[in-house]
Image 1 (spheres, one colour):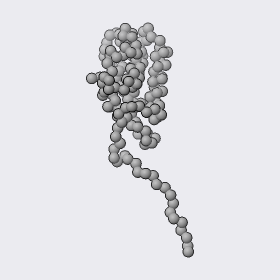
Image 2 (image 1 turned 90 degrees about the vertical axis):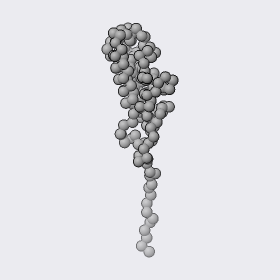
Image 3 (image 1 turned 180 degrees about the vertical axis):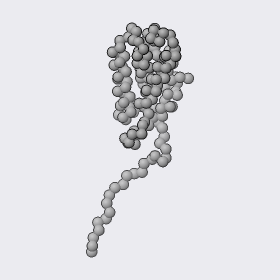
Image 4 (image 1 turned 120 degrees about the vertical axis):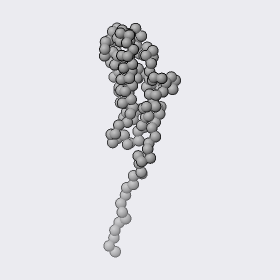
Length: 149
């Protein structure tokens, strides 16, 4: 089952608006949903920057987007729908207020950037860290003082 269905987009836009924009072509809607999932996953996925070794949670993004029904995280689901709507409205903004959709999209992206930085933690599946990546405790100090006696 898919993470988002076409019918579920009615929580972010009216069905007639989506049908007008896409000219009733479901493949356009599915393309926008796939693009939105890829964009949101990009913000949730850790990259190989040095600061990602600082103890931030590394989410299991594949597990997040494989869920369906009530198992899905409601916040990620809603934000992914907003991003999908943004990718649909690029075609045409029939009977929609462009500034309103743009503002919602910008808020979602700002939120996802905070999640990516580690400022916000979500209740999502977490990847287990491989054993070879576990860090050893850092030790520092000096040698005992040398005397010529």
